[in-house]
Every structure is written in C-alpha cells, then in structure tokens.
Image 1 (tube, rainbow, N blue to C red):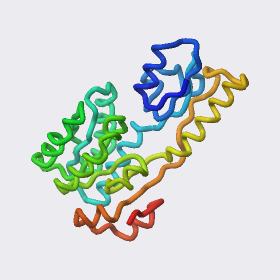
Image 2 (image 1 turned 90 degrees about the horizontal axis):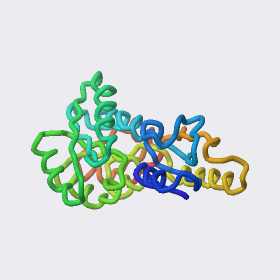
Image 3 (image 1 turned 120 degrees about the horizontal axis):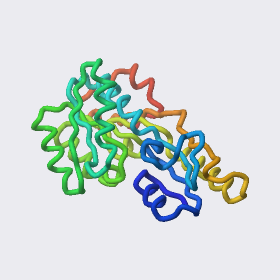
Amino acid sequence: MFTVTRLAALAAQRATKTIPIVFMAVADPVGSKLVNTLARPGGNITGLANMALELTPKRFELLKEVVGLSRAALLVNATDPAAGRYVELSNMAVGPLGVTVEPIEVRTPDDFERAFSGISKKGLQGVVTTQDGLIYNEQPRMFRLALQHRLPLIGYSREMAINGALMSYGPNNATMFRRAGTFVDKILKGTKGPGDLPVEQPTKFELFINLKTAKALGLDISPLILSRADEVIE
C-alpha cells in the first residue's frame, strides 16, 4: 500500500497491521507513532519523511530576509494534531530574529476568506504555510487572497511558486516520489520488509521565487537573494 501525507498513512496503519505500507510526505513519523524510530521502523510501515516541521522556521527566515517583516502568520489546518508543534518550533527558531509568529487556523475551504481577512486586519506582514493537504488543494483561492490583501506568502513546493506564491522552499517532490519507488521495489522483491527499511529524509532543498508575484506586490527582491534561488519564475 502506498500513501501520501501523514493522515493517509495513519489511516492505512489503522486499516492493516500485515500489508506493507510505504508512506511519503509525512512530517514527524516517529512523533506520529507511525514508526518506532527512523532507523528501525518496525511493524509493516516505512517511507519518506518530508521534514515539514523542521523546515517551517526556515521559511520564516527567508520571508524576513525578503520582506523585512517582524510579525507573520502561520497558516495551519486546525484539524491537524501537529498544528501546535508547527507554532512551537517556529517561535523558538525565529524569536531571536525578532519575528513574532501568529497561528491562523483553517478547517475547511470556506475558512480561507476569513483567515486572510483576519491576517490583514491584525497587521501581519506575511504568510507561511504549513504542509497540509487542505492548504495544498486550496492554492488558487489562497494565492488570490494573498494578492488581494497584498501579503507575501511562502509555500513548500515548486508547484506553489509556479501557481502564485511569492516563494517556496522545500524538498523536490518528484525526487521523493522516485525514491518511494525503490521502497516498493525492495518490498515486492522480498529483499527487505518495511520494518527493516530505514525511513529516509530529504537532503536537498530548493528555493523558488516568483517575480511576477513580487511585481504584483510591489516588492523589489535583491539580486543576491535571486542568485540563491534554484529557479526564478518570471
């Protein structure tokens, strides 16, 4: 069985204790009790973590570097038990940089209008998204609202930057999907069971910048920052 996202992996785990499960795009698989440890997962499940929790503070740093903000919103799916952990780690990491993180919750697609209106009214200067299926699915609405309220937003995948986010920073999803195939191959060939296949974490992270969005927001991004991008979208 192959699953994408933590919620899907947890559902698969509840469904079977015997069928092999390979997950992808999961934040904190140990904390989520999907596996015993990254090195020795145990049981019938393994896969690829996306380091979503650990990378969220880095996105605040990048947004501060580009926009010079001091107060920013963290868009979280309130139905995700990890929402509080995202906020905690972000505050710990960016507090010394002089950035205050305020969580803004959504639960359904209809919550985005209210959320972005609230971000604007609170005077928050930018938006960092958490890695979540609801947030990923609502990209068109989310980016339209970010532009409407003149809010720079940083996401976590190349697709987000292409679709209208000011920036994105995260692992290469295509590479991770290909790596997931090697897990499936080993299990099907019987060389190793899921419990003996260490969970992998990404080692390369990519920065994408959308200049069209920057222009729409009236932002002038420095050549130094642009030179660090893996791709500049014009």
